[in-house]
Length: 127
Image (cartoon, helix red, strand yellow):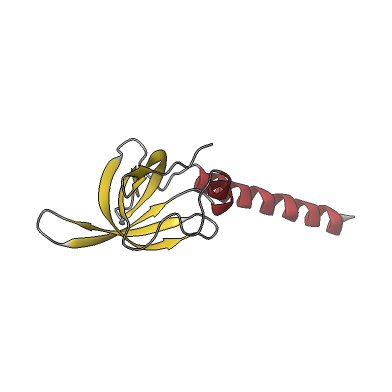
């Protein structure tokens, strides 16, 4: 009986530990959603795989330096439902994106739902 009780408690403890990290991830704690930034650049790679679609793009600064950024979107299965495909974004496309930058200062941002244009055309993440 004691073994079963300890086993059950261990399972419950693991469930709580995993739930906490899942909530932290999906709460967007890694991104500053209060101070959105707007970036324009050229797509170098489009990654349409789980857990989130990613757009890698280069932004040219006022001083001419080029900085690589990663825009993180919704999961592919959600994007597919609103019309995105593996070819919705291609290397060489010109994009403008609005999102919350990572709080750790790395060059990544969380793309806002309706704040992405590709070659002048809005690409929505919403129904």
